[in-house]
Every structure is written in C-alpha cells, then in structure tokens.
Image 1 (tube, rainbow, N blue to C red):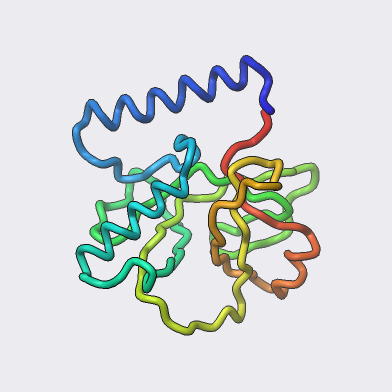
Image 2: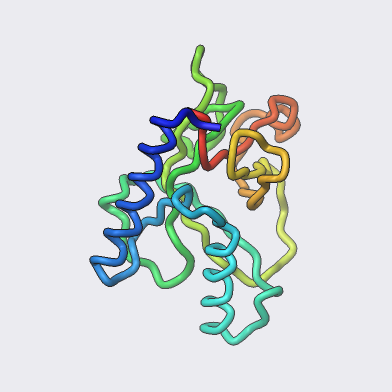
Length: 175
C-alpha cells in the first residue's frame, strides 16, 4: 500500500536490520518486529525456544507484556522473551510516565510505541481488569493481517472506551 519511494526506503531499512544482525553474529538486544515479513513465525520461534528451555509443551505458553519506560540503549540482554520495537498505536496515545493508554494529541493519528518486552509464561488464569486487549495487525488494512493480542494498561478509561475508538497496534504504516 506504500508509495514506491516509501516502500523502497522500508526495504532498505529491513535489509540493514538483517545485515547488521548477520554481521554481528549475535542476536539483537531489541528486534524490529516490523522488519519480518511473517512476524508470527518469529513469535512462535520465541515460544518454542522457551518451551524447550523450560521443558513444557509450547501450547501451554502465553505472553506477558511489559512496555518499557527506558530507552533501548539502556535495555539489558534478557534470557526470557524478546524486546520488540516498531509498533504504532492507532486510536490512542501513550502516556510514557504512567505506562498507560491515553487520549491522542490533537491531529496525531498514530503514536510510536516504546519498546515492549514479550515474555513467554506458562498459561494461567489472569485478570484482564485495567487492561485493554489491543489487537496487533501487520498492516493498517486490518483485514487478514492479525498477528497477536497485546495487553496494554487502559489508564483512567475502561477498555470499552478503547474498543469504541478501534484502538489497535499496527506494524507497518501506509506511508
């Protein structure tokens, strides 16, 4: 859906991300999840790695989400899960100090989300109170591009408020 110059810039950034990963011969501290053409496979691989390490079935794992408040250069290597960046929030803003959803600023259509720690954990019954279950899509054309549901703190508004606003995370913008 991007114009040719925007698509080409995006392609060059993707190639640079993967090239630097290969050249460094080690895993990145933060993964640019939007660089993957099929991010679901990447997320499944993270779950499989944890399942092997913990010796439990992969279908007994789910995700825990922690939106970081520090800059990427201050993030340390982790043993469980991955840090991901490159997600955009549509239909809401992000309050960095509180770590919650908030109203978007006037004329602001999308907000770049801070880095998120996706941590595989053994499935357990947990309360979704105070959380908005944000769908994450590969492209802004949401039909057929669902990737994962990300739990975000809903702040002072109930989750129904964000549902009515069609708040979602998007990996790739049209521009």
